[in-house]
Image 1: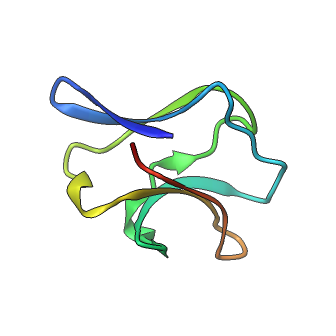
Image 2 (image 1 turned 90 degrees about the horizontal axis):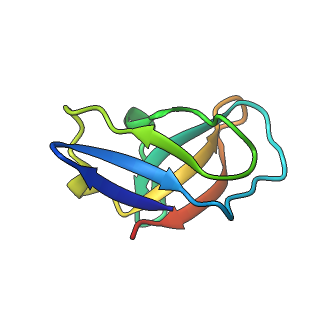
Length: 85
């Protein structure tokens, strides 16, 4: 996973090698130092595998985050965490 600047906006990109076994209601969001940030959701995970992109709202300050979470909204647990590049 990486955070890419595209003009005046940011995009979270999941690579071709992204894979999630399964999990109910997965969401893409940010976190920092092992702590999920519930106010940083970017949306529902589109696919369980493969390359995907998620736009970061222009009002969100990405400098406060160093991780991307795949978060199970129903159970309130992480399904996956990756450091931002």
